[in-house]
Image (cartoon, rainbow, N blue to C red; front, side):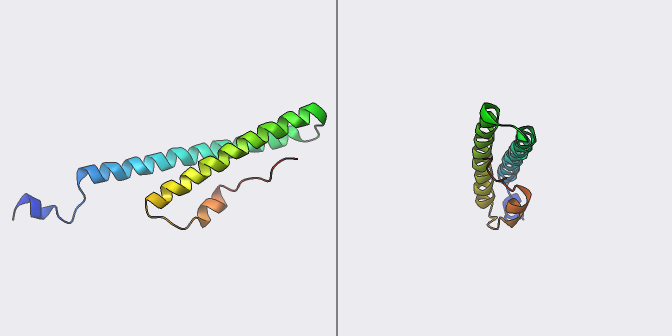
Length: 102
């Protein structure tokens, strides 16, 4: 039996490397979403009891962080779909975006 016929059922080294890179990229985006959600939480706590210009600064910061978190969360979903994962209930549960500050 030739070495070519032995490898027909197993992934090529390059395929393994591509899968590993996809997983690594997905992990990086997930960490970014987690960081942004933590920052959003900090802004929410810092905004408690604030008014006027100070409140406006917190609201603006929260809006910017939330928009970035939403974008990164979407990137995560796109990467998952590229890997054949089409259900995103876990993303909705793990990476829930907070309600916008008012």
